[in-house]
Amino acid sequence: MTNAGAGARAIALSILCCACGVASMLGVAPARAQTRPEIPTPASRELRRNPVGHPSPPPDPSLAPKHYRLWFEVGVHSGHRVPDYVTVAISPELGAEWRALPELAVTFGWGGMFFDDAIGGAVVAGNPALGASYVLDTPDGLVSFRAGAEIIGPLASADSDAEELAYVYALAMRALFDAWRFTPDVMAIAPAVSIDARLASAPLRVRAGIAAAPLLCIDQSSCSERGDDEVEIALQASASASLVIADDRLDTGVRLGTAVLTAGQATEGAQVSVTPFVTVAIAKRAWATARFVLGLDEPFGVVAGVPIWAAFVGATADLDSW
Picture 1 (cartoon, rainbow, N blue to C red):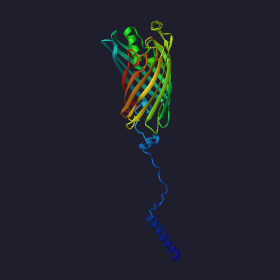
Picture 2: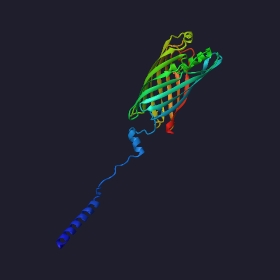
Picture 3: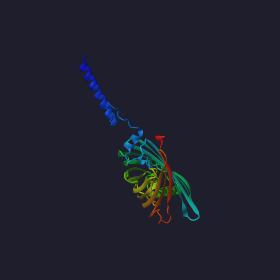
Picture 4: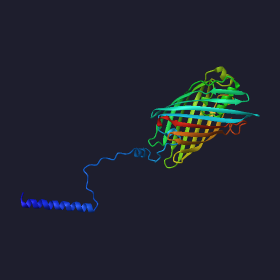
């Protein structure tokens, strides 16, 4: 190597060292050949899935992701149908939902009635309901649409005056809603459509639904004694608004509904009702519920001769989340 070549290399090396020193003083970091992309943590995935920033589940379980769900509810009424005797009605109901597919929900529900009145006591079973619904949820989880139907099995039957009156109270306590579940000696197919929406910019939630069913008599003699035809009709519609507060763990509001039933001399008519309700998240995927059903007009509302109200309490749980 010549002296000239060695001197040129020394000068180039000196210039490179000076350049690195100046870059370091200016805070400029040398570029890396390749950097690995950042792997998002589970928390960041949750925030991206829910851009509104509500990582906790909604207190009403209808919008929460799930596969298996159980719920239980019991309604209570106490009043004086006749003087000097307290009529007591207790109506439990349980149900389950299996989300077979993201777009398919299979449901089951069944209830009954424990009844004590001046004419006697009775324990009766309601009609079991097996349903299937198409479910459409928006990606942000704010809106859920359902359309489906229930098949009603003819299990309810009344063989005495006390049992007949027990079914009347079961219907009245629900303001004639879901009448196909507590009308004796009938079978039915009940289609229903509902929507559940929550505003992203405010703690407001709105729900609406409509359902109808032809009630097909399976015991003509019993239906004739009640004055029913071979086919009767049950219709219902409701709308509700609620506030979702307390870090998404409290949902409280009111539902306004109307139901029409053509079956039964005591239950035939249209019932307008108002139902205040509250739902509280008590665990990661468990909720406690309470509602008060109050009819406003005839046949069982506050203006009736014997108004029939009911207080319901219950619980809902997602078993696959625990």
